[in-house]
Image 1 (cartoon, rainbow, N blue to C red):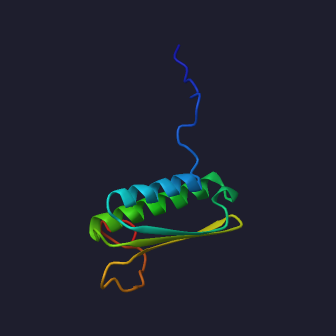
Image 2 (tube, helix red, strand yellow):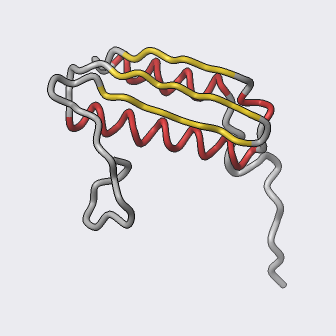
Length: 111
């Protein structure tokens, strides 16, 4: 009879600050100047929160690259206890701040 076999290594890696820094370096390599500001330790939060931080930064930098090629971005991550505050600002000319109401319909990813 068939029986599932547990993988020897985790299916998905835990996100660490090194993974986020690698994302930022990848964005730089394709022409997006990115600066990063970090307060606290990403290793201090759960793996789920750290992975959420990673995915938000990943999607946000993808959007900057896709929708504002050549513009710079700033990634700010603040860790307080088990909470993470992630801000990614696109420095494209004319990119004013705006409030976003949820839900947003129609393929905008992370606004």
